Image 1 (cartoon, one colour):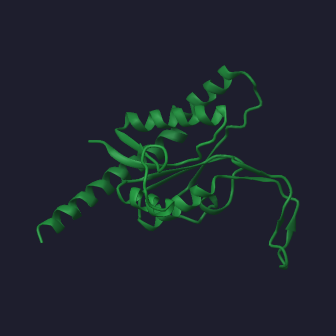
Image 2 (cartoon, rainbow, N blue to C red):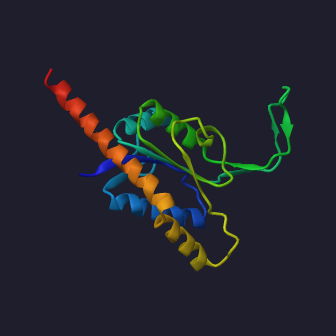
Image 3 (cartoon, rainbow, N blue to C red):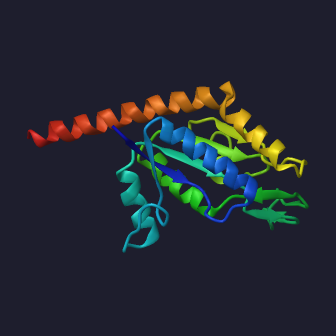
Amino acid sequence: MAHDVFISRPTAINKVQTNFCDNLEAALRIRGLRLRSLGTTDYSNKAPLLGVRQLLNNCEGIIILGLKQIFVKDCIEKEGTAKKYEGRQFFLPTAWNHLEGGIAFGLNLPLLILCEEGVEGGIFDQGVTDKFIHHISLSLDSKDDSHILSYIQSYFASEEFLQPLNEWHEEVILHGWRKRKKEEDSSYL
């Protein structure tokens, strides 16, 4: 039985990020997980947030993949406050990670949060959810494609990836079972 899981990730990504996503999606499919996302596998006539919520209601878990999308070179944080801070450089993910992740958290879906090193804010801040943020390094200095591919493949074979993935996968299966059981019980009323 396939389990539907939502994948929150940007659509415009670089070559290394694409390779990472392809390997991640393959690891999920091997486990019988069907990946879904609005605008990629599913489409709606509703406003985007309503479509996301409807799709998440039909899923049994979510993977939130925070990839570098915006480079903030210079910034002023907390302007006009005693905590004003200037000059820090960082990356931001797609804003949809925060929206989709927040909806999924509100729906009590099992979360697996992967974040490219250097990405921060919102759902990727430690302590925002009850889940650990798994940081991944995709900023390799080597221009050699075979080295990058080898690094990504070794990550997906590592216990660093497999243990959290398997734990989350069990949560997805259990969540789906509870959801179906609740639907069955309510159909008898």
